[in-house]
Length: 242
Length: 233
Ligand SMILES: Nc1ncnc2c1ncn2[C@@H]1O[C@H](COP(=O)(O)OP(=O)(O)OP(=O)(O)O)[C@@H](O)[C@H]1O
Ligand SMILES: [Mg+2]
Image (cartoon, rainbow over all chains, first blue to last red; front, side):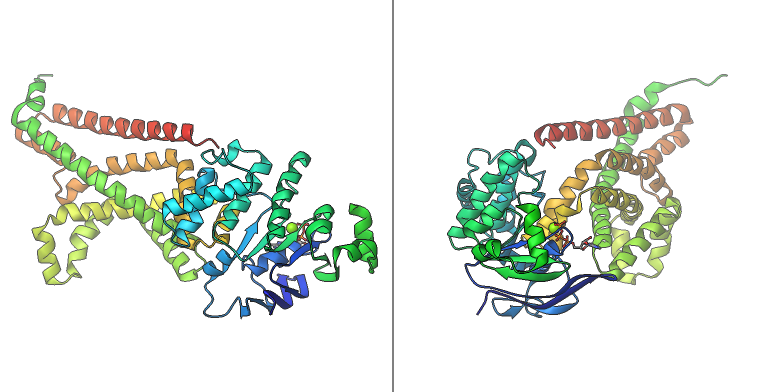
C-alpha cells in the first residue's frame, strides 16, 4: 500500500481551475521532486496533502485512510505530514529552541525537558548547534530554513513536504539546506519536494514529476526525465532551467 | 472671594481616610476590570477570526453594541435593569455580596472589552498570514496557534493603544459612583458634602487619577521597552 495515494484531485479558486485531476502515488521512503512553471499548481497540490488547502473533488489517502475521513483529526494528520515553506515562517517572538519545542510540547504532550533534548538533537542534525537561544532574525536565511526543517521534524512526521525551500535563499546558502534535505532522503524519509534544484533531483530523487497548467504532464525517474523528456512542454521547461 | 482654602482638611484625618478608601476602591475596580476586559476582549476578537459564521456575528454584534451605547446607561442596566430578570435567590446573594461593585465591574469590563477587542483584531491583522499557517501546519489547534503564536505577537504591537484603553477604563470608573460604589469620586463628593470644601476634595481626587494614569502608562511602557530589547525583530 502506498503511503500517499492521490486520486483525481481537482481544485478551483472560484472560476479558476488550479488542479485538473492529479493522480499520484508515493511509497514509503520515496523521494519525489515536483517541478514546473510558475502558477502550474505545485504549491497548491502539496498543500492539499496536509489540508492547508481544501479541494473540491478527488481523494487523498494517507496510510490508506482518506484525509477527510470523519475520524481523522486534522491536527494529528498535520503532525504526521511536515511542511517546510519557501519563506521559513519561523515564529519571530520565540527563540530557535522554542520554535522547535513548541509543537512537540503542545501537540504531542511531550515533557519540556524531553522536547528540548529532542530539539537540540535535531538542531545538531541540521547543523545549528550554538544558536539555540538566538531569535530567528539573528540567523541567516539558510540557518532559518534549517531551523524550519528541524521544527517540522520535531513532531516526528512520516512524510515531509517542501515548497521551494531554497528559492528565497542567497545562492551561497542553498547548498547547506540541500545537504540537510539529502541526508534526510538518504535516511529514508518520504519526501515530496517542490524545487527547481535539478542537482538535488538527480542525486536523491526516485521520480521527477513535471506539472503544467494544473496537470501532471510527465513523470519519470531522474535519469530518464532529464535525458529523454517526452513532452514538448517538458523539453521547453528543461531548456529554460538547465 | 471669601472662600477659605483648607488643604489640611483633605490631606489629614478622617476625610483623608475617606479619600484613601475611595482610592483603594478605584484601584481595585479598575484592576479587576482591566484584567477581565483583556480576557473578554481577547475572546471576542478571536471569535471573529474563526471560520464559524454564528461566532463571527456574535462577536460583531457584541463589539458594535457595547461600543456604541453610553457607558452610564450600560451601568444602570446592569445595576437597575438586570435584577428583574434574575431569580430571587441570586439577587439576594448578590445584594449580600456587594452588588454595586459587581455591577460596576461587569459594566466597565463589557464596555472596555468591546474596544479592546477591536485593538486586538487590528493587531492580529498585522501579523503575516504565514504565521497562522506555520502554526497549524505542525499540528497546533486553532486555539493553540492563537495562544502561543499569534496573540503574543499581536499584543506586542498594540501595547500603545491598549494602554490608552486601560487609562480610559480608569477614568470611566468614576461613573460607578452613580450606582453606589464608594470609589474615589464618590468619596470626594462625600467629603465635599460634609465639609463644603469641594475645591480641595476634587483637586486631590483629580491629581490622584492623574497619578494613577501616569504610573500605569509609565510601567507598561518600561515593561514593553525591556521586552523589545530582549526580542529583536
Ligand atoms: N488563494 C488564491 N486565490 C486565487 N488564486 C490562487 C490562490 N492561490 C494560488 N492561486 C493561483 O493558483 C495558481 C497555482 O498557484 P500555485 O501557488 O499552486 O502555483 P505554483 O506552481 O506553486 O507556482 P510558483 O512556482 O509560482 O510557486 C496560480 O495561478 C495562482 O495565481
Ligand atoms: Mg509555489
